[in-house]
Image (cartoon, rainbow, N blue to C red; front, side, top):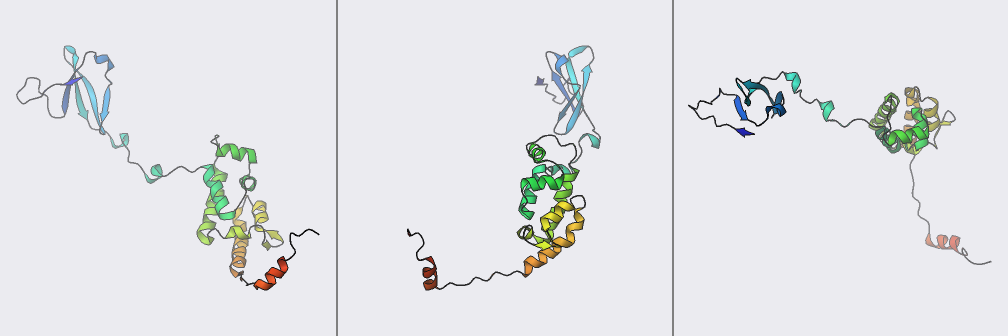
Length: 205
């Protein structure tokens, strides 16, 4: 389609905000055209269907809503929950599945993009572990399996209270305190003693 020249004084000149098009078949023009966040309504010229006028219309603000911060943020996924659980708590895939309340196979399907009817449990676990990370970093994972609290490991407390994870917070704090009190002392071994201990290794009897 061609723009008609709208020079001043021309008989075809239109008021400001109006554009005239010449088309071979007006049937294929849309009723409204949107360009650069402006919308134009299609009006027919009297007595000639091949000459149509597009006039700019004022759009309500709801037609082009401003994007909110939530629109620009990436959507929460099942894999986000899995990766954070591995990073902060050192959990295995089957342990994450138990914590969320699904089977290992179901968790694998969800990670691959299968439809999840309800993300509530994933979000709950993610939010709780994110809070642990913000308070303790990723050091808790070193005491998940080898630090006993009330004769149970922290991992066992997690699984026992997976429906009420807040109950594990005192255990987490106790494990964090124990981990913080543990110091590693690197001792130097005398070379002569080291060679003596290694002598004879690999020899045939």
